[in-house]
Image 1 (tube, rainbow over the protein chains, first blue to last red):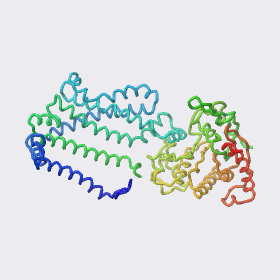
Image 2: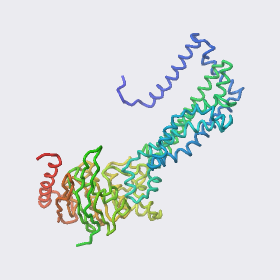
Image 3: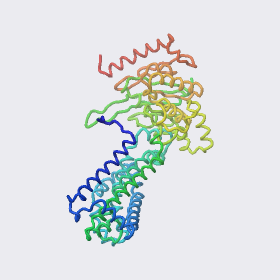
Image 4: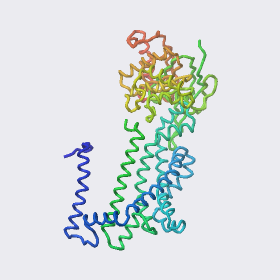
Length: 258
Length: 263
């Protein structure tokens, strides 16, 4: 029996991680291929793979994936560019925080998906509308989380910087920002994951391309294999982007692991 | 007598009461004059306001009354003219040892070549050659505090303030660090204000020991240490050292008992 908090080896970790995927697919195959669930409602894994292959080779699903990725990344970068500096300002300067924090806290709870109809009214059904959904969904989260991170900077490091001759701006630039850079990167990684859920919602309504659009199209055809394939693709892309983000952070902030 | 570099004039500090409680008098009006090149240790039990006094000199805390003059100018806030070493490890974890030592020089805008020269000389002085490109996390506590001392000294401050810098170190390391710091002082004769609760440390390092009393904090005794320099660790076992230690132990014991409410 493993004991609490006892670490496991890397190979065990990988084996265990993969085995749950295997278990999951096995249970799915058993339920569908064994005839326990109607094919109309849930495709079996083999049909799903076949449908997926068809989507990719015959129906240009790759370009749908490309469009969705670009929307997520575009909206997310837009949000990050605005939110990270604002968050740093809020974390560093308490007057700024007192001014903005209540509103941002309120705005954070506005569901991005509820903005879709409104945004269609304002921005039409073009790319702008999709970017805006992701932007609204991400920007307030990033601002608040970055502000909290910066606000929690170790006081003694700030004091040390002052006694070494740093100005107020020097403290922001050379202590608050570098001290929190890894955490900010971690926040971005987390929020990027959420951005994926917003993009699909945006694509389910008023869209003519993208993974979400494909899923809603497939619904009309009762093509559950395609729908599941679309969902799995999102999962895989999420996994990949997460992995890349982590690798990038490790490279960027070696001192964290030192 | 050499000239006064730091003058503490009637400095007091009252912390406002928490949730309607009575305000806490951390520091009674205190006067202290520090001569140039002096090594003063401030000795006292915990909670006697010695760290508060040091933080006020550093400019990290404001006095409730009185003022502190450095070279005749009143201290309004922290600055590079007063180097500080903290009890906690305050190296910037994202900077290497060399970059940490160079921090103040960079803020001052010292050109790179000159910066490297100063960093190299202080890395040498605190015995950290070969560790320039390590991150603080990779170093032991003693090495981190040595870096912190080098970082403060590299700025060439008027006065060096140390707030129980060796408090978190084990006894052996602590002894070595005391010798290292004293060695640097004997060579460079920086003015030093060193806060500690360790009697031996206070005597061994100081040319003057200032004893503080607890709650409310005030200066109780000011005792010159006439032991000759250079000092060697064996000095800690000489009769002169022991008699000073006995005297200070007595002074501080009464304070500690009062602070703990024992009579």
